[in-house]
Image (cartoon, rainbow, N blue to C red; front, side, top):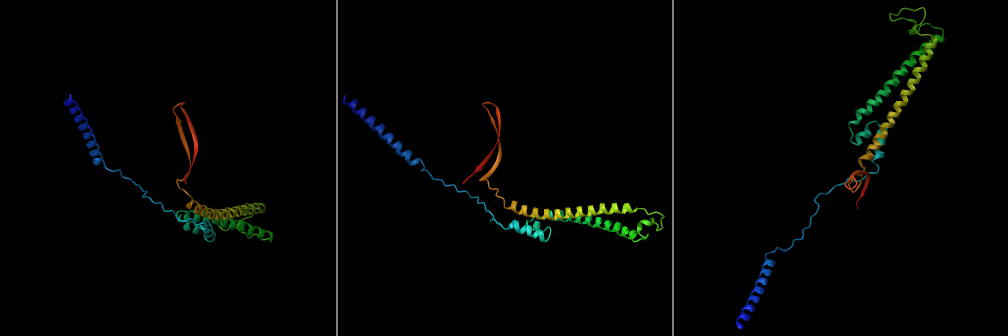
Length: 206
């Protein structure tokens, strides 16, 4: 009886010692926890905001058309600016020349002369009746005067548009496109009722 009790006690002590040894071994083999600190390596460099840039671009375009576009580094717009202004100036000059042509002929007839260009044919021969009557000269003056004034207004409008374009471009170049502040549409499909939802989400991160 004593031997059995002794054997049982030894078995219990052996099991306890074995479990303690295993725990110690586990503690030794288990690597200590490592605190990982992950830092964002991407640094976004933001250009400083220049509040005077739009005013400068507009001022430069007012002095010389296309100069504001060059200030904004939108060089491809410079030929468009000069083509538009050149077209307006061309039509203004053309209509003005035609207006002066018919006006001079009308003044000559009022003075009693029959020497204006419309009294002669293409070969320079004098005609009995002019190719353009007095009423025709008056109508032509009205038409070309109207076209001259219209082309002048269009040219001034294109000049103003050149200034506005440079100002707006300077504003947009400094527009905040940070993802921390975004407004975008979203589409959502619900599996429960198979409905489609369309909405608008506003994201703002501090």
